[in-house]
Image (cartoon, rainbow, N blue to C red):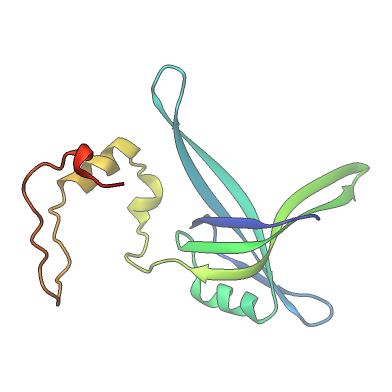
Length: 158
């Protein structure tokens, strides 16, 4: 059994480009950036960004071109494909995700001009999230009154 599946969630790095194939079918190309953070050998937090080329066909290509813009969050599910072509005797390669499913991310705030030029570190983002006041969701049911005593693991019957 073989499996060729890609699942990506990230931000669009450039506005989608819509074109038509000779058959009349629309095709849309865009790029998605994904970030990952990790700690290196010295314990310092590092961030790595990967860029993924996405291709969407048909009616979904029209929808992507209409609603998604640079900075939009997007989830893409599809298959990996590598194309090759020759230019002036040099062979070129391009690996793309051929999208089967494209889901739009949350539409919280639209990116501003400053958002494109200002990069915040993960520590700044973490600090901002910690300082926000936590507000529990409003519940419509009865409130559970948990005991305030510590639970002894030896008292658990299993």
